[in-house]
Length: 113
Image 1 (cartoon, rainbow, N blue to C red):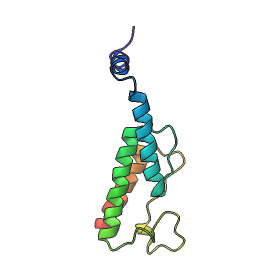
Image 2: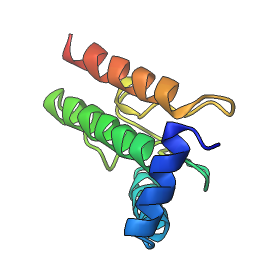
Image 3: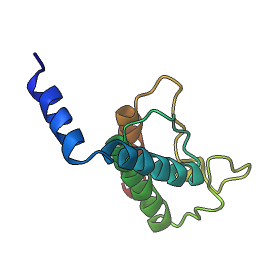
Image 4: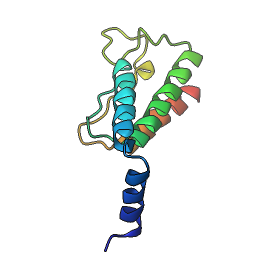
């Protein structure tokens, strides 16, 4: 017997057979936007978490700009950033998205303080 979640997923698939394709397309779009900002993302990441991560990255970017930083000069692959604190933290190899998102938000808060 299927659990409540499995039953609702089956019902959702019956009601919207393209749902999985839409989720994959959303994940690809978010991954592309994050890649443009210098963030490495795996191909199997959850779209909801990717959206939250993108929001955190954009929050960090706003904090950098408010502190007088230039986003083009302070990219993760920049050889000569204005300040290391203006560079988006890199994701650790074994770090879950939620942990990475928390570190980015903490770095943004640090810039504001």
